[in-house]
Length: 166
Image 1 (cartoon, rainbow, N blue to C red):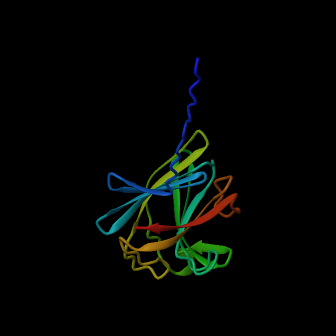
Image 2 (image 1 turned 60 degrees about the vertical axis):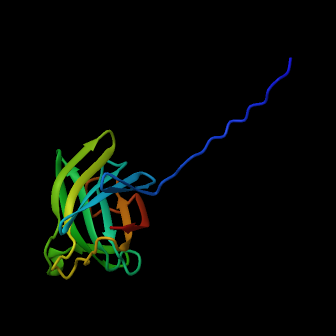
Image 3 (image 1 turned 180 degrees about the vertical axis):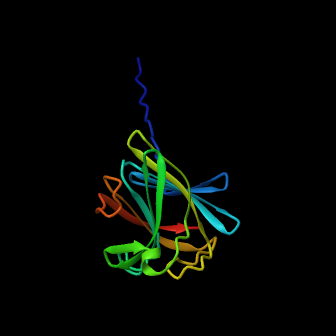
């Protein structure tokens, strides 16, 4: 009797960024960021493995400084969302507290099975001096973070960064 040797080859594909049905998706550790351009706005759906706050930010000059940031949490089933600006290397404030305006529109929020998800829109070309002017098709540095609770003033338990092409 002759024994045949079989080799099994397993191929893993890891996609950090994909496009599906006009929506883009980035997977980062325990965060997913999906977005699509709708006329003069960008709609984001961001999910993180936390029961706390979640944040994304665009184009910091260094660390958090100068980043246009969106922070959100889900409290009692409702999305609580804020538009912030990185006013220091490790600090940020609401745009309104700095003399600007909030340019984010909250759409929905869900907290289920230890995952917090928020959907919101921001304008591509905001007139607020604390927002970044964004252009569909351009690439930007994106910072992300989340915390362990809904208090957006507490420190993050996760942070990361990547590039995003709108």
